[in-house]
Image (tube, rainbow, N blue to C red):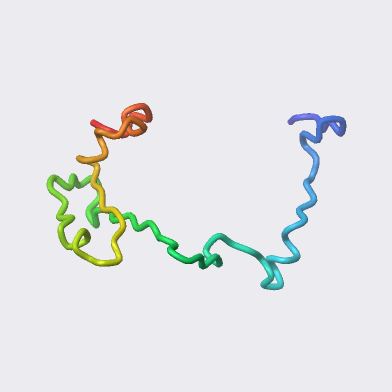
Length: 89
């Protein structure tokens, strides 16, 4: 068992200031924002565990007038950040 150290706060209860507002419905969340030109991200995953989507069909998403950008893991492997994070094959 770890000994409580009041000097550092380790092991001490934390008084949360936001709980009262959340409990009475006055919390503020990022989903509550509605800005002009705002875009939303949608991730589509396979319905089958451990399945590999070899050729995802993006054409229907790309022709949709509200689509800003459609991507797949195959296309993302060329993005520098994905390689650094080990997210590409």
